[in-house]
Figure (tube, rainbow, N blue to C red):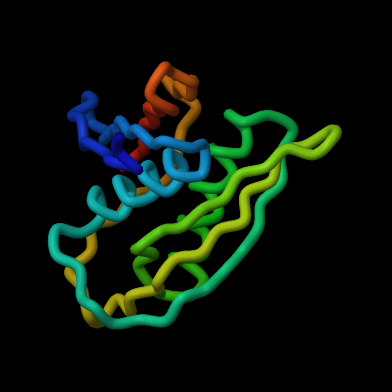
Length: 139
């Protein structure tokens, strides 16, 4: 059984990530790895890990907010988030992702801009093999 994987898909003028994971956290991290791949072909082994948590009212909103937070962290820290790890849990009334990524300094990579995550065609569903997600990013 797989742990997590992603595939970049062409999507009109945008880019889409189709991801699979054995757990909800793994599929979140796989989509984030796809986001990183959409921004950069070759990753440097530099950079320090940073952590953050995001809360939302639904799984789909949590995925959107998690990816949006990664784009925010990229812009504020001046790094390319990579090597993603995520754990997703549910409390009584909200979903929470506790996440980390390695922030590769922009000086160490040739990165392309991804402007934003979109709700356009977003899909997050449980399957017999774990979880699948499809997310479109505005480039």
